[in-house]
Length: 278
Image (cartoon, rainbow, N blue to C red; front, side):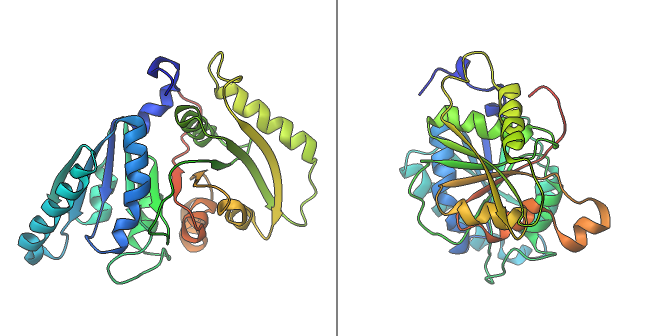
């Protein structure tokens, strides 16, 4: 592992604290693989959070189940603690603003609900102040071996900065992908150069030689479909949350939500806040 001084400052956003929201169902355990991998890589503390919300009667059982899960994860060498809260899951996630934090949540929960409009996960993606890891349908995670990052040079580079940081920290290859509709007229060479320029703009001196990056333009029935089409070739997808706003976003969803809903691999959704220091 390279010394911390050579890593992106943005790496600290997921380095020191991962809050794993769990309903204690079997589906929630899908987060275990990617959360464990990121925690080991970045030496992050994990807080296993169960939000009772409208079910305070389950406190005693939830307390026991949380304790058991903490023991299991601690035996794997992870730094884990439990938190039981009376808040609703969405409200708790909205209040989580750790300066070097990250949220983790499963795509499906106790009742097998997919990531659909109005679900807990979708609401969290729309309102979170930190990156959110969404674990998909797979129970087994083979480790972090490659990353694909959705890129649009017209959007802020926060997700690009995050993805490059993780690629450098883990020493794994990364594909920067700009996915467009099949019928869109596009200067592909010009777009690839714009993508290269954006990545170069967020790299620190000397990092350009160390990052194992490819740049591709893909065509599909929408940006989300293009990203999901190649997701199975990688162990992790990273996208920015910038997309539709207001009522249009509520009704139609953003590209990030669509990717988090459909990708076969874990997805990290990074809030795009514009150009700012990490």
